[in-house]
Image 1 (cartoon, helix red, strand yellow):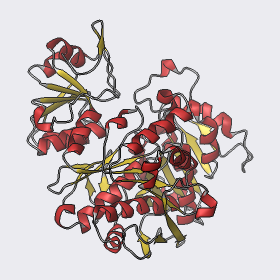
Image 2 (spheres, rainbow, N blue to C red):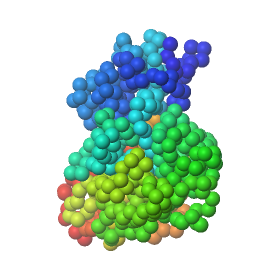
Image 3 (tube, helix red, strand yellow):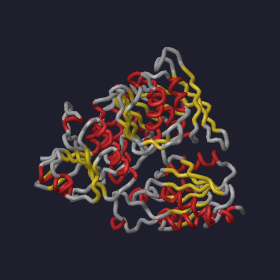
Image 4 (cartoon, rainbow, N blue to C red):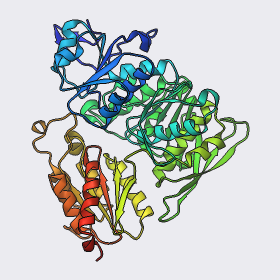
Length: 521
């Protein structure tokens, strides 16, 4: 019988249920099958287990770049999910996108195979390393990528060659795209801690970074209070330190709810001073000072003021320069540098290493320029992320018209935050909202949620030009062609969202080539 919970013969897939005893390791898994192995979070774990000698295979609906990579490593991937795919397996891994009636789940259940959530696998991997988790509604991928980059490029001894499990790809120093998963020989594991389904409650890292606790995934948590309570619980599992951004009001609420012992080993990084932040519940403050960005360069500068007693007896002021724009990236880098220092790296060495970080893939990623129309891709899918992206865009391209094609991610998120999305998108000059990327949801469950859900809220705002700046276009190919026809010399077009809107970058660039004479006006 599977370790996952069941009632009266009914299969219950509970992401929060811990399937392994503390003494178990990845070598107790046996032959392991991943359902949906091509998913960003699943492919990383499959590759890491494979690198550790675990027998791994998987299935997915269709080929992708992820499945191509796994197959190149010798991992068998079947396309189409069928009962026969799990024959003879010891452990079957599912993600929160998989339903109990999936044929492979049903077959594994009938065969008595162990059925575990992807978070159980990540928890096993963490138990064998000095783990650093990165949680938060946004900033997880960039912050964990920055820390992995610092360790890869500046780590020595046990800090060299870290393992990392990041739900996205990373741009290497030379611009090459690196996969988000690696099982290194060092003793550190950097991992995103996904809070969307509550499964991060299983993790017991040495260091927990919390970028923000701004309400999201209310389809799972129900209320903002429940959401923040999950972060309080997560912080309590960190055995050495908690690193939190103090510029987020949700994080401050979490900080003040922490047990005194946990708060005492918490470090708050913030652009605000202690008086502005108020009660820190005994936590240590690291200030982000003198933050600035050189217009049009994309270079971000700031100084980290680290109090005495945290990493050395004396207080330190560390100058940091980033090649990725935006104050939000100054915050992300601060968390990564502090974590590297707590792991034992010289803080100046860590700050120097982060300078060469070019960004996680799909984070302000410039995809090309045709006739001086620049195309940029970004994964932003929460209103705060979009606002930060567009603020960074204004600083990077102060003389340009900013045009956005936004693909909402999840019907539930669109319903919950339609007004907030409208306000964030109002920072752009020209916006097209496309059809919603459903991910794990179904349109029939949200018949009233469409691109117009956001557009209608936006038209209530005071924005110039009044009614011409935003529209809804269901088909993203049509939206891409429309935006090309509207673009002019010097404009910047952003494709924004966590779904497949990134595919439109090549469409836009090719269309710009075909219509380059129209962009000169």
